[in-house]
Image (cartoon, rainbow, N blue to C red; front, top):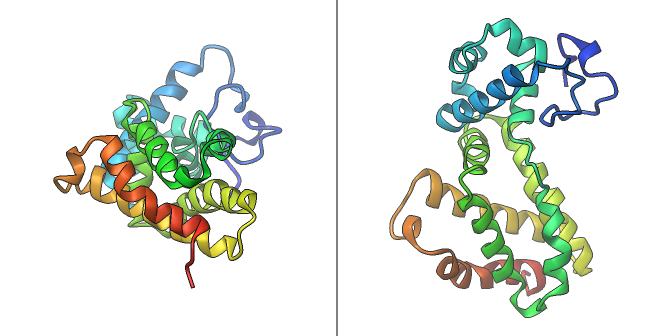
Length: 214
């Protein structure tokens, strides 16, 4: 990852720039910083990674483009900050693992869609999805989040063989589901309630994670 434009504002930071307290901002800077993040999520969500520009994001946030570079450095770093979630998806895995292992897939789908349905999360996920189909760097970030952090961790915790393959299969299923439901808005899937989709898709995720795949 390229160095940011103002390194002294990010001292001690290890890669993510999304959370206040991690960026070393001066008091009073949070308004512009947060406005840029929100604008970036909306712009990436509407235009994807390749279509979004620093200039368009700055205009949306009503700031000078130089201020975007000041806080986030490059477009790549701004994207990474924009799609960083307030709560890691991996955080809910212990609760799922502690539940009924026979309904593991259904529980994961239900939790996944419930998080999607929350209005404050939607711009983040839309930014991910629209970007994953158009840009390799964005796709790599989403793969790392879903496949490695979520399903990779889950497959390892389950102690199943072919954990990496299983994680990839499950992650691809979720990306496809989200693209059809939220980006393409293909009916009747787009309007189906969360419970219905969880019951329908859950067994597929269950098989990917614990069943026969050979």
